[in-house]
Length: 203
Image (tube, rainbow, N blue to C red):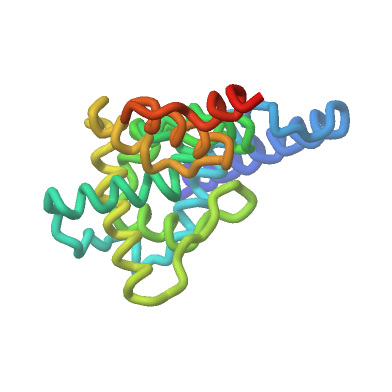
């Protein structure tokens, strides 16, 4: 018993020292999303994420059977809703991902893959406070099913193929300029003259 008390006291002291150092650093340098989270922040964030998942969800297994059709559906959903921050390959190397705090994680790694199905589901449905991860769920059955299918695709990310990524790129959200460029390329491939060139010829 005495040994456990000593261990707890040591942990409290270490935590307090780390907190003082963090506060001192903040006072001196301020807060910036460009900074990398410290090791202590990562440990605390991981624990808070674990506690944030309702206990009745943590041990749940994915109730949606994995089929080729489900994987295709979830791949399209991921490309349309998630890839903007996480990337089609799930590694977070996007325009937005590295500039968030904490950075969008590499979901192909153990940090994500070792989470239970229920934990992944809860993160998708409810989001994570004080991060860029929104809660996509609204509590109905349709939302829940969509989140469970995404769990399947997250499990698939370490094995995603270049062909799948190519298909996903067609489904990624596009700006008006990107849509126009795509339409011009498609028109050119079909043997037509891009609208921009037609406009130039008129002048």
